[in-house]
Image (cartoon, rainbow, N blue to C red; front, side):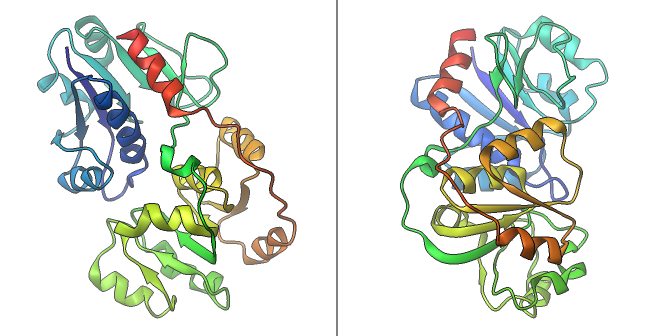
Length: 287
C-alpha cells in the first residue's frame, strides 16, 4: 500500500499546499510509510525538494489521481477543484481517502476522512499543519519581512507600491516570480531575499506581513508579529483561528489601518496549534 498526497499547485495558486504536504510526507516517510507527492506543475515538485520531499509526479487535475494511484492505495487530497464525481470512485477503490475541507459546511460525502481547520472530534483530523522547525526557539532580527505569496501573476505588489513607501519592509520573493518582475520590485524594496531563504527568514523575522495563509501560521508559531493582508475574504473559521493566534488582519493594503494596528500589537506565546506528531499519528491509525 502506498499513500499519495495530491496538492493543487500552479503559478496562479501558490505553494501553500506543497508546504503542508512536505510536513506530512516527511513525517510519514520517517515512520516507514511509502509515499508520493502529486502536483500540477514541475516547478512545485522542485520546491518540494527544498522542503525535503525527494520526488513527485506531475498530473493535470484532481481527476487524474487514479492514473497514478492503484486500487488499495490511500490518498490525501488538498485541492479546491471540482472532482466531477471522481471522488465516488476514489472512495470505492482506495483504502482510505483524506480530504481537506473547503469550508465549515463541507461534509464527508462518500466516507472520506475530513481534514478541518476546526476539528473538535475524532471523526476528523486537523488541517492546521506547520513544520516542526517553526516551533523551535529562534533568535529574532528586528526586521519587517513582506511575503505576498509564492506567486504574483497580477503584479499585486506593484499595484500597491504606495503601501510599502517609508516602511523599510524587506521583500521575500516567491518561487513563481520572474527576473524582469524582480527588476521592477527592486525600485520599491531596498532589500530583497531569494525564495530559498524562506524558512530561515520566517523563523528569524520579528514581524511578518503576508497574504499567504500558511505563511501567517508559520510565522506566528515561530513567535513573530504577523499582519495578514486579506485580499480574498476569510471564512469565519479562518477569522476565528487568526483571532485565537493573535494574527492581525488588514484588508487590501489599507496603509492607515496597517499603521494603526501596529501600535496595538501585544503578543502572548503561541501554543494553540496541534503538533504534527499528533496529526500524522491520526493519519497512520486510519491506514
